[in-house]
Length: 576
Image (cartoon, rainbow, N blue to C red):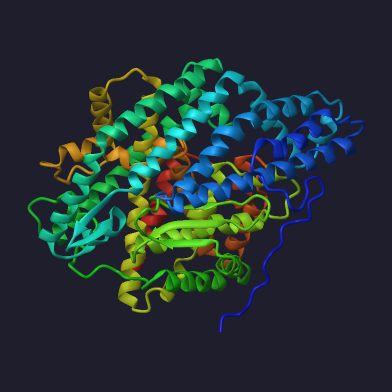
């Protein structure tokens, strides 16, 4: 019998009715007007005003959250797609002007200086000033069009299937076969997946063209030279610049890419191959069957909960609550959007995890990753304002990537066989090494894209291949698959849906290694630092949150070398 857990209740509303349903703009407009027209006569009244605004924004955020979740769970359900479009096209554009007016009302208040001295409010007020700086009313219809266009990416990719052994499979399901030991079968399935992706390459190219055009127009309207510079401001990147990103790229190229070559060379030798091909990269190099950490989504859920419990009972309870509330949708199926995410639900404070699990090690790591995000949501539930809970992605990804690593001591729950356990840990750390160069590729590509928005398709392919070559091993032979390589970037949904949200994975991966290093030195102290950092939400700057975890926000070559040496040492220890 599974132990019953106490299901959290959303806090009692003090501003909006308990039974409000957002079915049109008319439902919520009176509350925006109330906030806009209200007289504020003291610092306490300004604080109450902030709380009421936070409640309104939380209710709206959770409403759009469920619309997005339902749309991605069932991309072939037109009702869900329409519900999302209705919000994006008919409600969201009307919220934006009010949000700008409310921001200005707050900043014009003589009592704002008193609040700015308080913990968390200083960070939030910095964000409000930034929002005022970049807001342009003429961008509202462009944002609506952009969100409508990005929806097409999920529809196109969610519909991609291939037939293998007379069975229709999603590309995620088919990709599992690339771990099988039969090389000719891997080659056949790889080519089917590649061909299916190329089938829609022109549509995805055209979609990207449209998004680049719209985003560039948004940036120009707001007075920026390009969309990259606009996006850095809009994302609130107060703690680093594009130049820091370029330093990260350089450090990764110099310190991590040589490790990629070592891994590829070792793989080629172990497999006794004349040529290492793209379809040889996922299979076990010693010819062992692929690891199967779980049979189905139920087993994946149960084992993950137990891993979290071993780390700390509270962590396990977070996932138990999500399971009881039906906030987990883990298995891959036709009509489901690709990828995975943890969607924070602002009012209830219990997030939703979406992913496409089949039965692989990568799937196991994904639930641990998204589970780290989920824990973050629980640890920030009680923070005073909704804005305090919205952490920048450099912090959000620290939560998830650290969980992947600090949970490794308990992976025996998935791999009771000691040899399988060693394999799993080795494969994950090798994947970590491969992640940093790929992050650099995607980030550097985006800088070029938006610095050169008028580029042709041919120039885009050329630049993509040039950047990819800087961060790839020089062992893998791509001959015959050049066109597939030309369009590898189309697999990365971030380019379409959340531009410039990718460098954070690299920054947070370095931070996660540092958290893990602390954890290995002292489990209790390391976990305590991790959880203390997450509890801060966004009431501190990014460097201060990292400091709370007893780590550094640092992209220097020396620091990357130090952390990568630790990873090398851990890999060596696993192999002993």
